[in-house]
Length: 210
Image 1 (cartoon, rainbow, N blue to C red):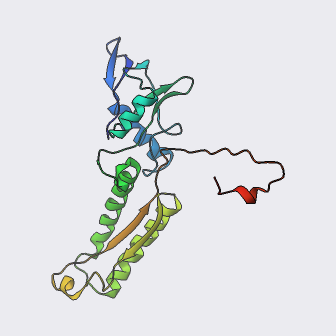
Image 2: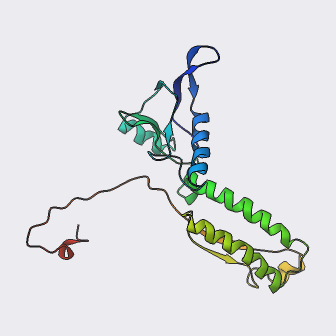
Image 3: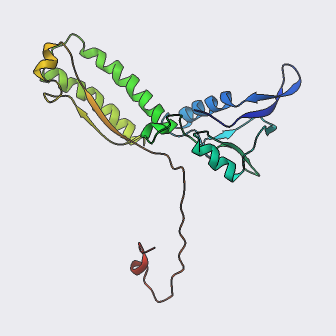
């Protein structure tokens, strides 16, 4: 995760003003997002991306500069008049189109991977049979439903049966659980279409035609 630079702030310990990197502020936004919402909510934007305690930015990018930075996977930090200083991007440095090219999805999977890995430890040294596989699913599926109810997941499926725990897998003393997740995506661009409609025309006649 890469941001666009430095901020100018007061150093109370040395009684001077100095430029400092924004890395600490970005980490703080992630922590604040966790406290206010959940890890899978983007820390960027007007609702959760406001950066405090600064005099000015070393570089305050204009619209064209922001677009160029974002195309290079650099998340701009921008001061908007009357609206404060905002983290205005949530891309990772993955470098290819993927769900994981956004920080909220990457952080969602960190939560999922840690929690489910912890739950799966209780299957160690049990029998790889229908009972253990059902027990695993009964641990994982309620957890994923809870995340879904908190808007982190659109849909999911847990596969843990004879299709992925074949005889060969069992004979190797292994256990396989496949967790398929459709993550919620953050909005990065908004398109608004305004259409003037004649007085005698029903809306049902024109909706979807533009």
